[in-house]
Length: 570
Ligand SMILES: [Zn+2]
Image (cartoon, rainbow, N blue to C red; front, side):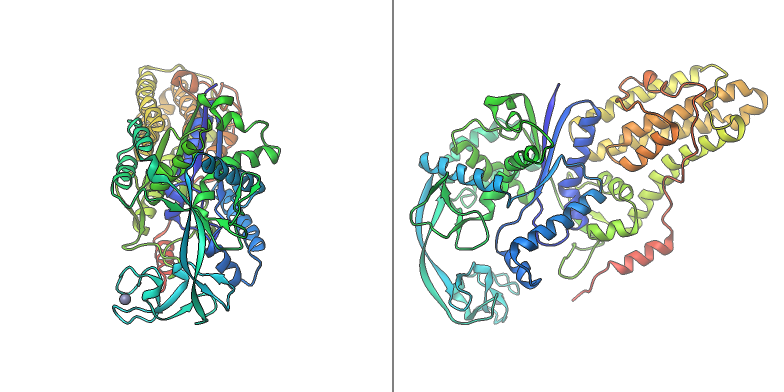
């Protein structure tokens, strides 16, 4: 059986993500996972929360919680929202897991043995009041360029000038506000990525099927000087994975932890180990070790464009540098940004729709359909309430929902809630089947290529075909003269419902399940052959008229939501 390993970029633990984050990785990854399962392939779909680093520490302090406790709580919150959107992860792990601790230390040890890690002494700002070194962006002060009094140690937000912490006038700790700061010497580990440039270049060159967005970003970072600089992989923090060389202590690095960007991608692997330890699988190495079966696995990653450099350079440098037979990614699907109603989503200004809010106003299928059918693939795209309303009302309610409602109600009124037996299919049905077979081939091709908007457009066209057929076959008119012919049309149309459900399930899983349940269809096999797929409801089988599948969004609702999520513009 073909096997597909799918990972979504792992969301940071801090806070609830907005719809732009959702459509930039987790949602399309789920679409692809569901499609591949539908095609009968063995799928392992993994995601996790990214839990280390200073932002988690600061958010925990703000919430008055211990950082481990805060991360456990926020992981549960994110997991619950993921379930709400029907994200079908085989496991939703945590980068703070014991499995990731062990693997991260293992990789660091291997990289050190391969001579790819150097120890560098640096001078860094230490806060006596906080008892810790401060990352650049947690030092605040007055900008020497424009006088803005909340400039950060890495950059002034007001005039955008790049800064060093020592440039700031009256520097203070952003954590405690203390001005009792001094510069101290500290030692850190650096991953010598630059020495792997040729190896990485050859690997990227071998990926001739990658999307242009992915390859162009990877090449830019590889060749632009700054991109492949050696990078510090350790920090002076309490929260994180202790620096060790495999299982051994690392002399001189006591009390330091790995930097979050080093351990986060390793969680893709550790998450599979978590999946096994949680009792959901029995062998994770056959997905990740090419010496243990993973050479047959196709590995696909999903992410926003800002994450491409880490996944095309840094993480492969870790894997290749280890000298061990770990699985490298086969295909990277990356996304541009989704903007919100003429601007950007903004967490700080509460602008845009966040994942929990979205689920509080409409079922997940409405969002899944609109977001996926407008996925920002070739350029940034924009969420507007008008466009969302139009997409839901036209595609879901008027086309798919109306088709299902119309034919099931018609059948109930003329033949009862049972698939009618009389009559034979004519050239009209044969033509629809031929058209559907061609469209199905196109739909599958777009899904295989992960061309999401094209796949959505094809699926919509498949729904439209059914509506047009029903409109022109007009069983309600035919019934008066030729009830047997009307029965055949009705039987054919009713059989389109489970066929549509199976094709649509990757996009709208709840509605698809409701359609299958209403029709009493238990055959979930992918309907690759249209004639076979349209014979799953035998004459005489009972069904129920389903509840309204999709309610239309009214103008009043649209206006109310538009106002509610506009945010506080400063
Ligand atoms: Zn400034």
